[in-house]
Image 1 (cartoon, rainbow, N blue to C red):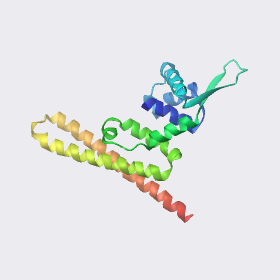
Image 2: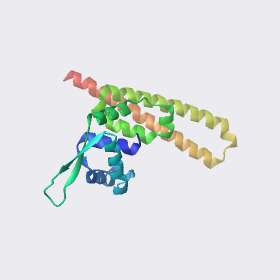
Image 3: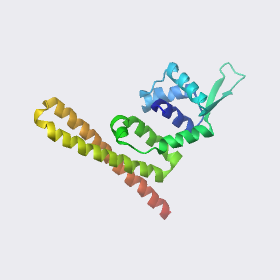
Length: 184
């Protein structure tokens, strides 16, 4: 599943949406790096509908502007659940970071807290492993690397370390919410 399809399915899982509704989300929120172009959204909706993951119904038929509103099908719910449940891989951490964050953004309501915590632990482990490998590589090539290359690599390492700190904080907050809910 493409990251764009994941974004569309995740948004439709939250509530039924039209193509115009999706365009508004993509053009007015931090999800703006996705195309809000009708030339991207409507063909994607058509592909997703042809796969049986969503179904569209026409609303406001008697008006000048009828609109097609999309909802997830049972098959779409299952496909989304399976995608969100995939294990975090080294390749995801290195090459598909946006997909990981999008998966995380949608998984809370769909998979629940325990699955979200499992994801975060795997995410954190993957980052820590990659940071260790990057540090080892940097030390091995430090003397032969141009200064700007070294600075760029250090920036990348710091970026991953920041994401590890974020994951630790979120894990603690989610664990804390669970503990506080038990006390209530």
